[in-house]
Image 1 (cartoon, rainbow, N blue to C red):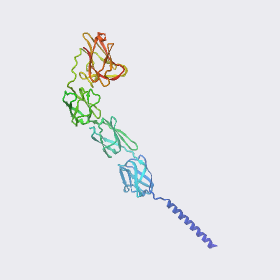
Image 2: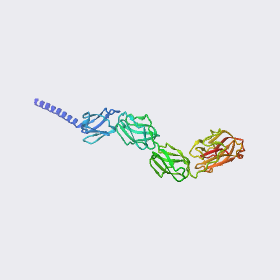
Image 3: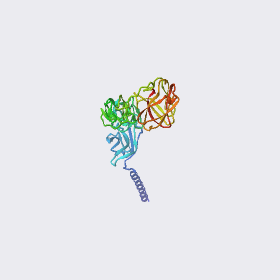
Length: 428
């Protein structure tokens, strides 16, 4: 009986040991050799602070790649089976993290990002469009966008590093402050303290002057490579096809539609630069006969004023786009609503010894043969517009009931819209 009892005891002990060994084997089978990245943090970490990676078998990781930089195993502050601690390098950028391991690369599911205190310390005060400028500061590699004046946005840069950024100034940018945008967990918008002054083209001279329409003129100056077009008087759009163009000289053909007057350089930035001298044209219209009493000739005279008018049109009494005589004319835009876009009054000019009310009109594209109501001293006279050239109109005083004086002069459209120029208004 005792022997049997001992055998049962030994059998029980063996069973317990066997079960223990079996459970131990099961635990070892559960422990995997797969390298896993489970998480990293904290969020909103800054450069120079410690970041912790949590996972399994992380003691086998040989390097960690963040955007722009690789941290080797020897530079880890701490590395265990389930944790890696390292200091975020200054050059680390945002993006997914890659763990280098003997089993291959492990890429994080979520990107890493940082709180970056970008500081702008130096911005040029002057620059030429098309050339590069250098901005200096801290964490400049985190700049994602620079907005120049007139909403000209640049997102691609020549180069950028921690301390400086090189960017090409767009040809279309204008003088003004820069707005600099950054990335990171707390993106910034930084406006520069001072405006960036951008170079404009300048006139020195142009020749020959006078010149015939259809012939070439040579414009001399500086930074003429910034010129996109040249606007002549009488044209709505600038000429953009040149015979030749360098930084100091432009050769351009004078259009047949051009009028005498100042020439305007139109750079890519659309900031116009006007010549101080006027272009004279050979074969241009002869000077008009002088007025006995002037209502308008470059400006209002003899008590005449611009009044409010009515309707949806408008008028500019100091325009120099298209001039018949002198330096300025009146640009009138009609709204097509039978409006009085130009209304003049207050002059009370005597007609004694005079025969005509005189004015010259230039009709722009689309106004040919359109009719205008000319209201003079309460009477209406209809005139027909000639498109593309100046036409002098002489209205006999007898056609408007021979008033003793005139104190009102108004132009009214007859239900059409368009633009005309009027000049040299008065009595003769």
